[in-house]
Image (cartoon, rainbow, N blue to C red; front, top):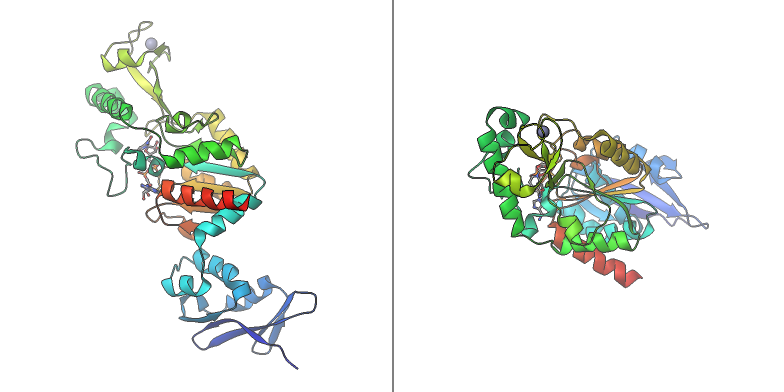
Length: 324
Ligand code: NAD
Ligand code: ZN
């Protein structure tokens, strides 16, 4: 007697399966039989099944099917509904089972604190074009505009506070749930939320130095347009401007940590700034992204949660605590 069940049905194509006594599955497609999910996927890869209209997905395979849909970049609502996938629950599950979780954040991490990002439509840079004014050429050729932009950003940052998402990450670091935290952000909201070790890939606005001789100076000196006491050079925040290389020690450390990770969680970045956008490809394990808008790399990730960083992190944290 056959116990054949429908594993996946989309329009006219049906992948069947039979559960064996030892709990494993045998997959059947027309007259082909394979014994692993990878084998079944190999058969399915011959057909554009992700683009077909789904009819049925076996409960035991919902999550695996959904991963393939996500990988193929077809986040179709019909598949999502049929797979009953709660992505936040999946993320919480992965975090709970991960041995080495690494987090990489970008400007989207801080928009809920009131710091505008650069690229999304909500980026409120009406007065300045951040890409021009944050370029090394502007510092060297139009110091007035450079100094005005960064003094403005420093004043604005005084008004903002860490959000619930920053606090969740700080708590996860404290409880050893997150092993390494790297950010592209140049403010210090992660630290202000309680994070202790934060790798600032693009430097920090808190530190001021001479552009020529690297001597340290105060924020006040920069805001007051003073020159370097040691050499008379122009002062600047110790950040990485467009057109400048990243600090090599921090870059290599971040690369190695991401290679070591079995879960890389990327939060709030358009992944358009190189070389940081190469980091996800170094990941040793799964990669999950929480971001409001699409990024060029979405189809390469194992999980994409389209949502607000603080809201998603709070929800994930709640699920993790329930599971404790
Ligand atoms: P970006 O502006 O290019 O992209 C931000 C991304 O975050 C967008 O894709 C947007 O959809 C997403 N986003 C916005 N609000 C979000 C939210 N609440 N939750 C989840 N996602 C959200 O920023 P980037 O990729 O970090 O690169 C920008 C560069 O500019 C970096 O070099 C960074 O140093 C600098 N920058 C820093 C800050 C900061 O320090 N807070 C702010 C703006 C820009
Ligand atoms: Zn100097």
